[in-house]
Image 1: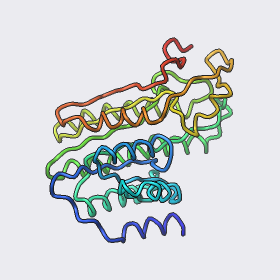
Image 2: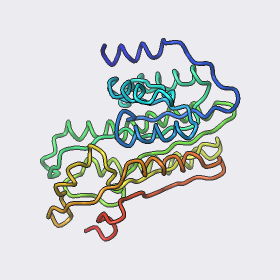
Image 3: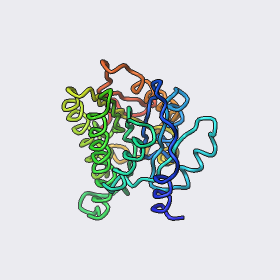
Image 4: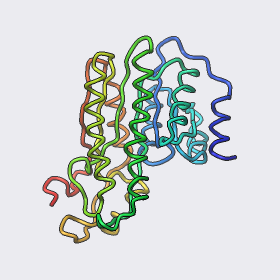
Length: 268
C-alpha cells in the first residue's frame, strides 16, 4: 500500500467517539522514530490522546502495534504538502473534536558541505521540511485552535542547539533552525489574544539514529573531530510533556535540553 493510499484509508476509517469529559488531543509530527516517537509515547502515558504523523506508514504502524495499551492513532502525512497537512488536522478534528497540542517535530539534516558546494536541491529540501513544514502545521493548528471551543491550545516547536550556535558545514540545517526561533516568537505573539501558547525546545545530542555518528567523532568549530556525549531520548520526551502540561496561563517560550557535558557552552 502506498503512503497516499494509507492516508486515504486513515481518513476514511471509522472515527472514535470524542470524550466529552476533557480529553486532551495532541498531534506529533515526525513521530515514527527518535524524538517524535519517544514524545508521542510519553504524552500518551501522561493521558493525552496522540495522533502520530509521519511521512512513511511502516514506522507509524509499527509504533502503534508495539504499544497497544496506549491507543495511539497514526496518520501518514507529508509536512511539505499543504493538502496532506490540512487532511491531518481535518481528520483529527473530525475524530476528536479539537486539537490541544501540536509538537512540530518533523525535520531533516543535510550532508556536511561547504556553502558554495551545497546543491541547491538539497538546500530546498531541508528548508521545505524544517521550515515550510513547520509553518504549514503551525498554520493549520492556529486555524483550528483559534476557532475551537474552548478556544486556544499549545504549539511546541523542535528547534535545536543549532538555533543558537552552528556546527561547521551545516548552512541549510542551521539556517532553518534559526528561522524556527522566529516562527516560535511570532506565533507566541500572534497567538496571545486567542489563547494559543507557543514554545520551543532546543535539543542537544539526544541518543537517536540521527546522532550515532557522534560516537565516532563529530566535527568541531576548529575542524577537529571529537566524540560527544549523548543523552537518553526519554529525557527529551519528559521535557516535552512538561511543556505540554502547563496551564493555559503559563508557557515555556524557550527550553534547552542537552547532554550535560556536550561542548555547547563555549563552543567555538
